Image 1 (cartoon, one colour):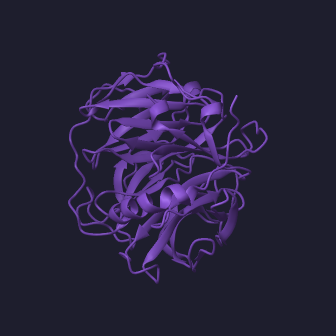
Image 2: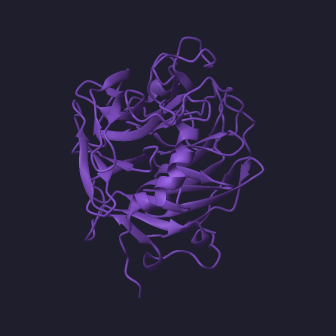
Image 3: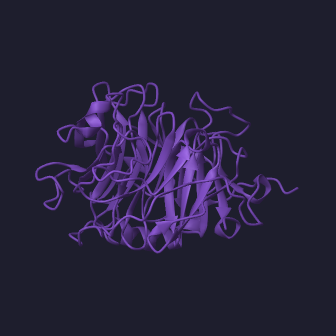
Length: 387
């Protein structure tokens, strides 16, 4: 059997990554997000996937020996940065497959599910370099709250560093769990962030609270004029603990969300919509709340990061220890199936790398998983093996 190999991440990412990320991350006014109506809901099953699914012997290790990693982000030259929740370190992936510490983020106060969480890159430099216009954004738990900061990126491959954090948004309530933490720049150039209810269920229905929401800000932390609630960063409400964000080719924003005891959710997010928590978990069927597109039993999913490539959505599952492959068809979603069940343990994030493969970030060293030698790791899987 072929053993897993370690390969040079930048060799595969540099050329394609620069072009893709300059297009995706450059801020600009842009149109408001497309908001077509959500598709009809259904319940996911563990349907048998087509033949040719991946196994450990067909995946490739990009890097190993990470400590409770949480998020990946790529710079315009293809260099990948990884956050570690408890150490507050941001690691730079090296051509050898090893890592170096690019920065330790000050003010991070890890505990429970809190710590250094999501990363996102915003590039306002064009092709002029990194001087003062390339920023790494981070969502983290401080001693007082959850917050979003941005840090200027300096240096080059093998020597990247981060400058002093600038606060973008503060005051998101923290707790031992339900901290949310995913951030991403949308096709409109704005920053989107997921926040959990921090154990206070009522906050999800309170438009005056930052918790239990998907939030939308400009890259500077201002409130976009076309947000659904004037003067508020709230983009949608009624969420328990969303941790996945991705856009499809039609401009729809998809979000994956942890349920409580019954149903995890995959939602299409529309501005100002209310997704029901804590009144509804999963399908509600009423006019007051927006139903999810798909639901899973919590033992099968507990979803975190998601990625959309073409007409397929990939959803990383923590408790479910599998990757859900969800075909998107004309705005809907149908016939999801699981791959890699139990092969890599807990999966925290999924990322469509410009090298034409899907990168998965495992999360077995966070105190809830069962680490194996080399955990935690980033693995690469060809899309041809993800039918």
